[in-house]
Length: 481
Ligand code: SF4
Ligand code: SF4
View 1 (spheres, rainbow, N blue to C red):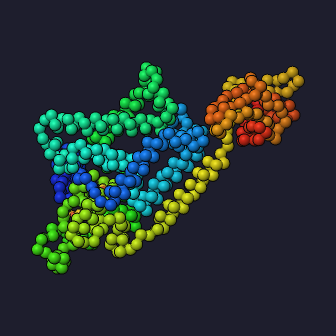
View 2 (view 1 turned 120 degrees about the vertical axis):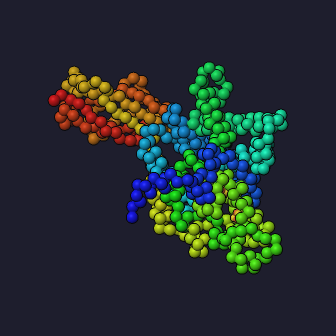
View 3 (view 1 turned 180 degrees about the horizontal axis):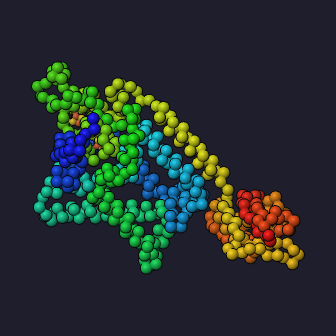
């Protein structure tokens, strides 16, 4: 039966049940203000592995802009000059199909990855998590101490010692944010342009310096204040993960079968007595909650805020070690693995996503490795109709733009394909398009009237370099009616 209007109004206005995790944000208090989190410093094998992984990723992140493949950056997304380099391959906005396929591949990749492995990306490789947990958080522990010490420091009156620590911390954060901001800038405009901004007269680089300051403040804001909010309210992954995860997805999960009924372990109680009491392995110590950087309790089940950072796995393993119980009360598992003891399966949905992804990757690679070295636009000159030459032939003037996508300069010539006629490139004797540049030329096409098919004749023009046809473009030729 449909609820009545009164029931709907009363359910919408009833007080929040603060005991129910679904009814409030983990990071908001009863007044709706942000609850500042003080996650305890994690330790354990997963944290150690994540640290190693993070160092490798941070090294790649900072060294990346300096790596060149065939003279091109490993990754450069120069939206200012509209030039892009991925794995040393240059792309231009004209490569629209390639971009569309690349975007589809990227999103299909995220979908299949999330379906199979949950938010493994968020916990292990996302730059936000890596920088926050492995750099900024560690520096914070170093300067202000662990969670309890940070709480005490924040609650303490303003003394010289407190001010010194805060100034030191925020100074270091600001310096690091400057470094990260400049790294991002070098991925956008390239290291050469960045070093020019740094070394040249600042008056000539107002926009570049503006971006430098904006990026620095942005990253400082994210890592000093915004923190977990970036993951829980701005990251796209948490929005669609609920639609992608199913009972077979690998997630960081609490084994409620083994852990419940939770309750403290009394000193006088042995395992048999605890089991006889109907107690599970969870001793309700809340260590898993204390280390969580997003402030949630994993024992409530899979939640949008969980970034799968494994801090709770380490915390709980530490507790189990002390109690002499097997590790893995919180672990990587699927829901079916926990509830039915089933192993991880490659489901039909995963297979479908994987085949789509394979198809897209194949298409992308084919497009990249078969794309022409040049991209040509062959357009009739604006406002131009036709001219009748003294010998009776007809000529049309064209504006031709040639984009050279290759790594070498290309001397270009044009030939009519399937039509008799003459093509002349006006200006210099040779039309050379430098590598990775766009050049424009005026081209005259002359046709005998007998080769025309009426007022408008369709033409195909071959674009040649060194006698080799690079591509064929279509255009039209106008003559008298
Ligand atoms: S750390 Fe383990 S034992 Fe402690 S509350 Fe969390 S799940 Fe229970
Ligand atoms: S619940 Fe565990 S895995 Fe998820 S964010 Fe918190 S600590 Fe990390």
